[in-house]
Amino acid sequence: MVTAKDRELNYNFTVECRHCERAYEIFMDYDDFHEKFVKGMPIEQAMPYMPKDMQILLTQRIGPCCWKNPVTYTRTEQPEPQEKKTRRLVTKKGREVVTPYTDEEMVEKLAKIPGDSDFVLDIIKKRKKLRGDQVIWGHILVVEYEAKEEAKKNPQPQAPKHIVGDMKKIIEMFEQAKQHLKYPKIRLTIGDSQIRLSMAGEKSKYPGAIQVVREIEQEVYGNQYRRAVDKRHDWLGRINTDGTFTPDRNLHPEFLPQLIEFLKKFAKDPLAVAREYGLLTGNCCFCNKTLTATKSTDVGYGPICAKHYGLVW
Image 1 (cartoon, helix red, strand yellow):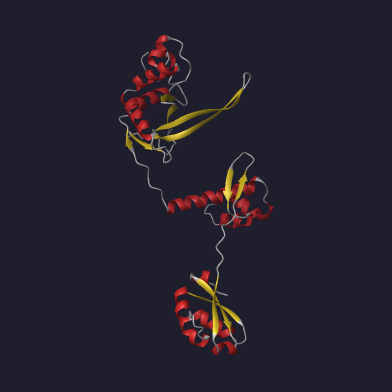
Image 2 (cartoon, rainbow, N blue to C red):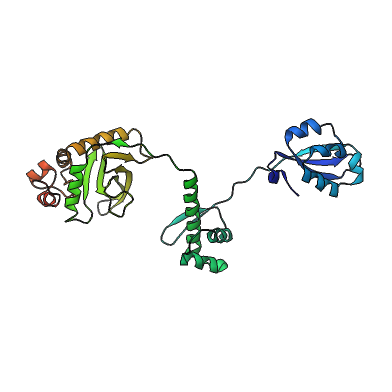
């Protein structure tokens, strides 16, 4: 039977004949029900107010007794839609996905994704014979594809850009260092936060941009014989080649002004900021090694890094 959900109407109603007690289910908008049927109007008189397909359905099913006798209309409570249960799946290498689909639904959705990947075609071909990580990766592909399609429909507003200043000096330092180092980095300190700068490569989405991350070390456990430290990096944003800074959307609003002012200061005089780092930490702002010579501590870097980055020592 066609239901209120199928018709996108508000309610279902049960019609019960007061003579023979037969019951029929109909769907109507609540306002129409309240105004026209609350007094028990016979179905013969109520027909003109019903949708055409509902009229045809009742004509085929209704008994002659119920046609002319008064009936009782009772609103049927619609069960609230239940949220679809999700599953958390993890591959052997730790890749995680939360999926709302069964394995059969995953295969059906995977078959609708455009492309001719051999891996996808193999999953679709095997279907019920899938095992282990093959199943999980199928779910990963479906969930990620749907997330990308949803993002295209509802694009997120771009994060605001903040003017940092001319990055020419810093970019020249990185370009010079690339001739000697594979991944040159600059480490600085803002308050209690350890900041690391690195240049995005040519294959990056933003080639030449300066990536800004916060290095975090947290001791998991330790004693006099052994110490374990958990290291992670929080992305704070990027300094674009035009001298603007694009912060991460999740960056704490109280930390952002402090970070912007520091990056402006660094863009204006990178050597002065490097000197401050050396005096504060006693480490090189480039390789992070301990500075032993007094001159190295005064400038914030050692002679080897000075040569790599094209600086005077």
